[in-house]
Length: 130
Image 1: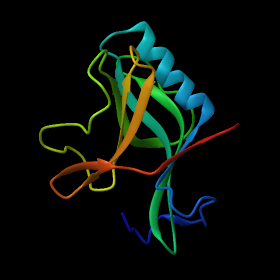
Image 2: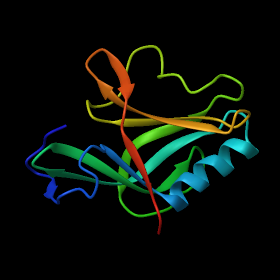
Image 3: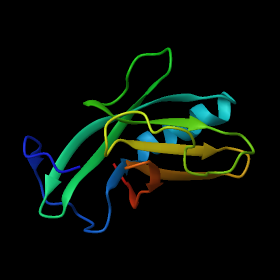
Image 4: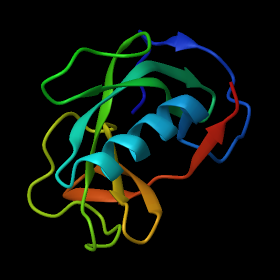
């Protein structure tokens, strides 16, 4: 996920690859709790620093509705009621470095993943206060 065209901005937590605003996380959870098959896009910005690329999620665009937050799509989310928060299966669509959030509203859990060669792997993430 190293792209020299991205704005250079040192990250606050060196080990994190994804920073999610508290509002965006709450919106994803609320959507997942209200709609069993909820899915949509995470919106925000992509940055780079000396450790490589990372993303900041500031809003969501639920499937079939308008976008919230600022910026372009940096990943997607979906709910899997009772399915747990496993890495997305099947072929990994999208560019390398794209992020995914999987939400299981029945177990009150959420996990983040990053597209890597051959699929998705766990992505160290930070939920940020506004």
